[in-house]
Image 1 (spheres, one colour):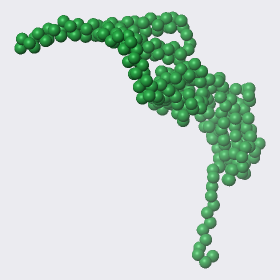
Image 2 (cartoon, one colour):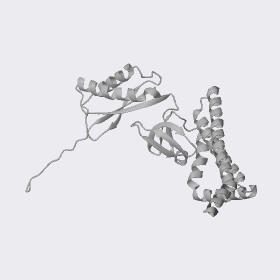
Image 3 (cartoon, helix red, strand yellow):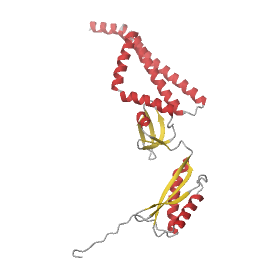
Image 4 (tube, helix red, strand yellow):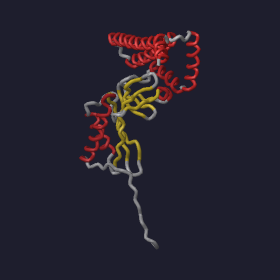
Length: 271
């Protein structure tokens, strides 16, 4: 029993002191990092910078670097020599680079995304078959919120190597609507009806002016195509309005909205 107490006392007077120092350094380092990040965020907020994408990416990078410095400091205070720390860091970095190639690729791709800016936070994009509004761009991935309210995580590498459609970058978008009608329909009547609807919509841009042409002879119908331009922010509302209005007006004019049909002739055996 006496020997156990001596060992415990020896631990607290030797190794325990070093452990306490290390824990203290970790806690103080964490508080200092939080303080530094708070100061940086406050300075950025006061600067009223509009490039939130770059700001958030840099904040994440700075936080990562500060924690790496804290780890190196703790190792040094624990008695690990600087040379050993450098050697250890080199070995770890080599191992990490081999084991986490995808992570490092995403990190490099993240820098590429925030510097070339194919998209920024708040823009509606399509990347690798996923449509959504950009919520945030971090060191390794980009978060998208879909129109259905789902959160999609896309790796920065995926965003940098695939084609990105940015629906928000330009101020205007073109609406294209195909309208199939019966072959019995008068071409001039359909064109006039569709164009009048498009031109009368309050969201429609006058330049370029709306255009409607007969674009295709279908198997069982004529295809008329309406092309018109609206502000990008009003694209969906205008598209839905036109779809509903065109259907209603065609029905009022007793113009058939035709669809593909097949005639099946059945012959009895012996005929």
